[in-house]
Image 1 (spheres, rainbow, N blue to C red):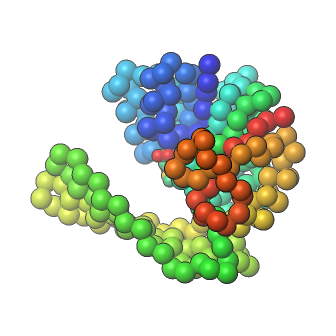
Image 2 (image 1 turned 180 degrees about the vertical axis):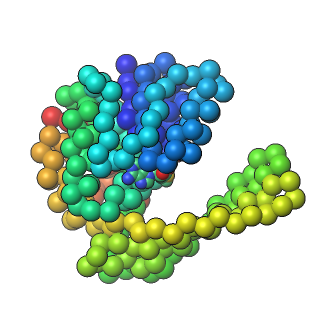
Length: 217
Ligand SMILES: C[S@@+](CC[C@H](N)C(=O)[O-])C[C@H]1O[C@@H](n2cnc3c(N)ncnc32)[C@H](O)[C@@H]1O
């Protein structure tokens, strides 16, 4: 039986559809409602609640085989203490031998130009153009300013939604130092965002998007 503790609606859905016990949380009530509705519409069961990575709680007695936190969500935690607390909580929620999967974008402070990423999504009756800009990372404050603008066209009308936030940055050395503060977790493998389990990589700057696999002692 596998369980997961972090919410990614599609991942939760596919794990639940395979018969796993799935739990997840998100800070944002709309994300929680979205995931609940989507699971319900597919007749799938999963526990979803509102929680913060820094101080979340899992249901009493729950012990998980797998916990995951992908697409740089971990970088929303804005302090080192919060990041340590989050890793400790995830480790404590795993059974011995359980795996923590953490996916995030690494920072090269020597080469961190402003960046822009665009995706376009379409469904019948709706089109979304999403632009995300990141400012150069600031080594001293360990932050990179982010801005996302979504241009949403629905029923012939377009509206724009914009979000501004700061991500906490991680060089490979900063990430290694963080993991070292949680001795119950051991880094066992790294992959890139192609999620090819046959292809591992080192925790360095050769590839900036990294998926860490950590095992609970
Ligand atoms: C990149 S989205 C991922 C959404 C969804 N989990 C998924 O995988 O499709 C990042 C999510 O992190 C949530 N978030 C931001 N800060 C958080 C925190 N401190 N604790 C928990 N969730 C947080 C946001 O509400 C947002 O839904």
